[in-house]
Image (cartoon, rainbow, N blue to C red; front, side, top):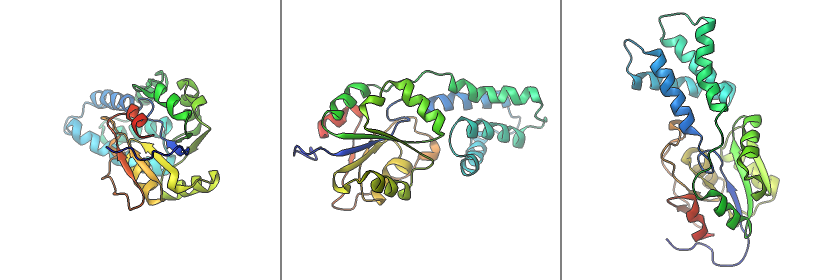
Length: 237
């Protein structure tokens, strides 16, 4: 793939965090697997239980936002919908434990990320842009050891076109030299393109199912890059 910009001018790179810089969704998937096994539904297959959970999570996001609190709420509500047994305090604590185990997991940086950020930060203006529960995201950023590569950290409730337009205004970004980099078509790529930015899609094998969406096309003169891995950014920037 061609090198997109060969001039020396610095660009602004907005970079996603969860499942772009470090693992995130795999821990939720493991917790869901434990939850489905614990539920052990007599009539619903594991796949059918997951579909119910997906629907509950969509509603929980609207009511409670993202993060472990919302996820824990979704597990409890799914159990209440599907279980023939009432949710006793003991069951409630057991279900919540599946979510709490995620909070205890260390931040697992994805391959090639620190050295790539080190390279990019010497040439360009990096802003970490992540959505989720503010305290949880701040904690992960601090524990990751990657904060110093970024000029700013932007934690937002949702990543949609208005959010990107707000970031453009807040930081005075020139859209012709600003890129959004991430693994989610729904949150990172498509709304950023809609807001007039360039974008780089970095696929992750375990992107959350609620983040799946067809990649939009980049209307000229905007650009959309698709790379195999985060370290490939060094070839283009």
